[in-house]
Image (cartoon, rainbow, N blue to C red; front, side):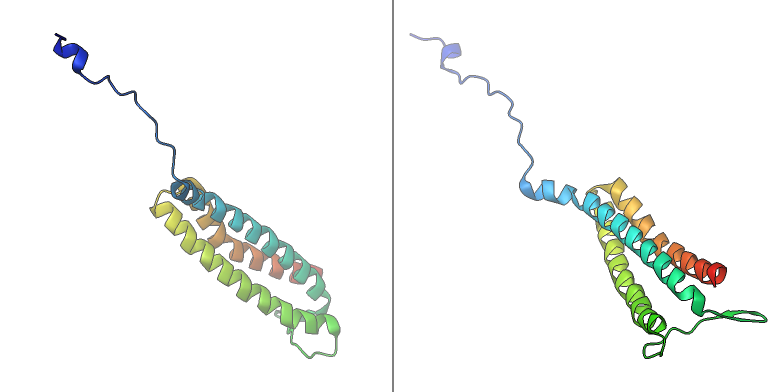
Length: 143
């Protein structure tokens, strides 16, 4: 007859379960929104520098400061182009920035790349302020 020890099942070896594709994708959310925030910051600053440099010759200086009026339909083609592209830059940049803010809050709250989400949130909030300051500074100093 056999002893009870020989009839028992062998000890199972521990098996590590690989991450599911959904969780791997979810953990990239913070990194992806961080990359989007960097792209937005670089493009926004580049456009602010370009628009500020292009618009500077058309700034009217007055006794108390300066004035600029970029409108579509102006006889000067550069002013007319700035009248279209400047508001487009603000609207598209604002909408993309808002999307980045929402996605970074989701990444922070769900711990899907929390550090990258925090940096993306800071970039998305600070980028429009810096872009505006760069634009106005170039208009004033070059104009």
